[in-house]
Length: 574
Image (tube, rainbow, N blue to C red; front, side, top):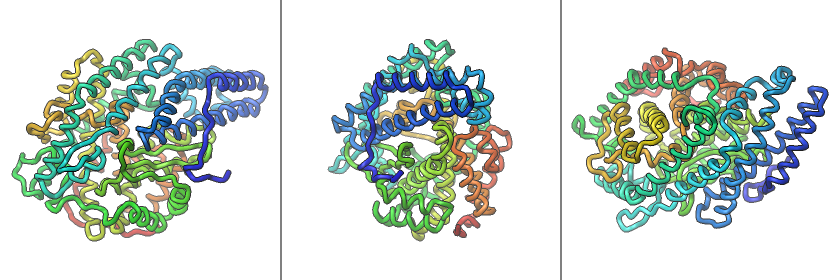
């Protein structure tokens, strides 16, 4: 079909009554089928329904994120959040029919076993009994998003939002950084009662849903909702131990190096210094939004492997919203409209190097989704979340040879800082995940006890961190700025797992860029056909759960950061 521009995309608003009738017809067709072809035809009708509903849901969510103050967008999102549990019930009922089908083996051979494993998780994580709680959960998540989007942070005579204040947090002047940091956290401190109340409601609500489903706690339900089908919490616990033994000491060495470069005495680094790695300040893109999009077009033209034509399509159809503005939700993400066969990239550029990192990250998501848009089932358009993040985080590294386009003579500084932050992130990301386990294992904890849990995580994974008397965070509330903790519980170890894979792609590209790009392209095309570890190994990567995984990554990173030269990956080319 011809792809319209984003602003011309439309959707059909589903109703419970219409969908109930549609599903009755799908069930009847499947029950009456006597051949595999007829059963697959019924499944295809279900697929078409899911595509339409996903397009509606994505567009509603996008419009709200683009303007959280628009009453029409708010109402559309509220309707979506209210009706979605009932729609999930319809989908899960059909999934249960497929799981119990006498023809399951034949369908698995046709559609792949992975979908059935995913559906098993979905069936265990949902019941009509928790529909009301799911509606309440969505309302609380929206309340949190709107609260953050409403931020007005006074700083030197001007009000900023959480995105636009960011450029002062990486300023070369230490006094400016500290002042901006205090201004940001002073705003958070004023919202603390509301932030505590929203999260407390979410924890109790989620624990109650787990109990209604007959599960031990929300940790178990969270893993099912994340569709983790080839690892469990014991595997994650083992990975945490590896991070503490192999990554945290490396991070402490990197922090010591950072202090020396910034001219600080050992132990003098503070939280407002952590994002800056050079006395000159971090490198910043040499142009504005429009200039950056042009440089990106040049970069992808030179990279090839389908990224060139893909990015041209994204620009031509208005599938990018990258500028920060008032009432726009903070953060960055990628979503998709399967009816039109295209993704959409949402971000908030603020003039820092993070613009390039977020942009290449989200393009990685979008490229994978586009390349796997013709998969046999919607379950395969995207892989599970930790696999999704391989494509995004890897593209951040695979675009390294073209960073001169954005940073000029500062490109090498950017690469070193990017790698350093990737390694430091492994510790932070693991802390966020460990914190969530503690929270949901003790759901009756008070807000103060949760803040103490976060302080415990900082001591274990980021022992160098010092806030002095900075409002809010000095009391253990840093985690409240991490939107995933409120809106996407347990979506964080996924970044750690993917970062380990992305670093392996970086190592591969250092040795043979063309081969690494071929592996990357093939991984994107597979979409969600397999589980996380299977997908990683199919791309020639070592599973992050293998004991030897971190050793090679750490050795290569130490060599790069200690050696000074960039190496082969900047040779460029298709």
